[in-house]
Image (tube, one colour):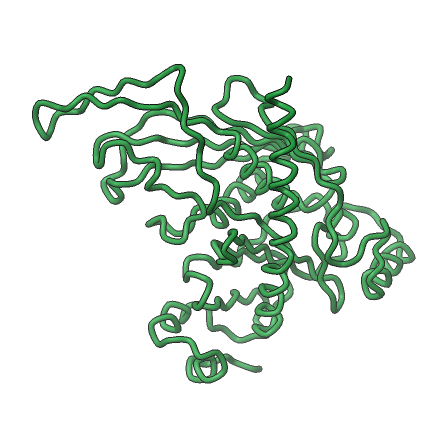
Length: 346
């Protein structure tokens, strides 16, 4: 069994001692059944790695042996069943302002996968551990119409695991370090008043790659979010809670410059693909989801699937994800701008 020691990883990567120490819990035997992912401290913060494996209804896709060979063979030849290449997305559609009661909302379709995200801003009190930051909560729900197994309480486990994956990819560690959403911008009065953002996602229909679609919908919803302007009345004593006047007419556009996109690379056979359909996901051995911001920095990383991955493969997947993220970011920005222009005209 091959084991990546700290000395070997330092020699091959050039990482610093402090960064390697933070990765120590993740240095396991590579042939371990569920090996954690080794992070690259040069670009990935230590909190950005998780070995969680969220459920997918694609596991229930029934395919014949011939259909499986057809999907795997097409991917090996860089020609997927729907005519796409391995690193090509399905058509992306964005619609903003779909929920009038929310501060911001968006609907995103990637092929037959459709999701909705909404953002609600409410006044709150900062936590004692981060008095100069606001708070963000992310929750996902799966509509019973998205897949037959979601009827009743069938979608609850997937909802919880998607919520956890999104928090990992967008909010960084417990301290907020590495977060794709700037929590400091949500502070109003340090230690006293802040904005609490409640981000809700809904899976309407599901045909693979739901995590990337939810990430895109959240980014679009935040671009559509207006935060009410706040006037602060000075408190008479330092311990007194200040009076806050929230405007009903003036709003500040939420800054989404640092909000990342999520790129999931799904490994089928010896190759990996982006924007996998449910049928393609049913043939995967593992998948790595990387959230990358506009500067090319990694905000979070998750892995699912039981098969282990060699660190060199993970590094290559990260490099590919960073390249693909530029295309996805540009396409998403274009679709968001078009959707907001259409919303203003209507």
